[in-house]
Image 1 (cartoon, rainbow, N blue to C red):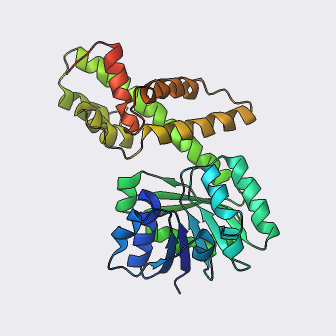
Image 2: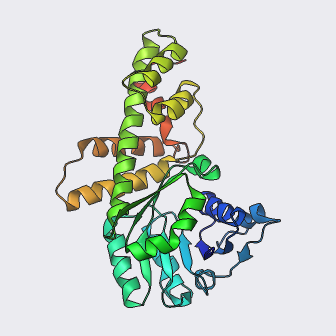
Image 3: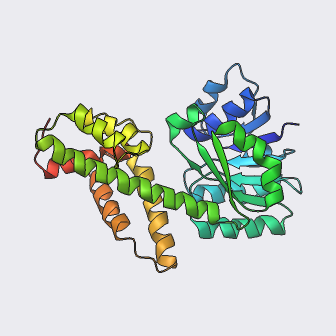
Length: 295
């Protein structure tokens, strides 16, 4: 039996989630304040809702896909919020990247209302969401996970149950992002050195990807860097938001993250130049500028 699902936030990620679930036979109703996002659902059976509360009404599962924790809070609290529309027993899956502390707080509020909160961030960007090439991480009560797993499987290639403890999936997403951003910066630095040394870019990337330094980051973002093509699949504005979450989480636990702090400053310098909507891989441009290298 398919779950009846509400989706709040139908942008690049949430829109892909809703589309995949519709294609898999789920009943889906969705809310987004933007009129434009509904154009991609023409010819599909998405039921349009007029508020987060309406999107959460009479469903088994509510998915939230929103830019940051402040927007999530605005979408769930109040007379037109998700909490107001949910029936008792509804599962709320927050797919957004948010601080672990926030996930724990929202889980407690939801529990007090007879609802269940799962933190369910994903690893992957918009173009991966479009082709179901995502890893979904889930934390919270196991029974709620089992009830909702079919929906998670419909939007990604792999679903991982992280822990019974709310906040653990949110924490894992911050770890994933931190490793991603550090790896991307390392690739940018190394590729710049190779290029200025006169190495053939294709040969260099081939050896990097097939050798000990190989990674999915190099295969995808390395090609973008070497072609100076930076499609905004993971914009700098979002990178900075995610770095802020990771740094704050580390501070809360007395964990030094010096590389994260350095990257935050580097990306801030990019945003100050009006590049906030460029992909995070455009950090390559900074290393080229520091090396006085022009292709």
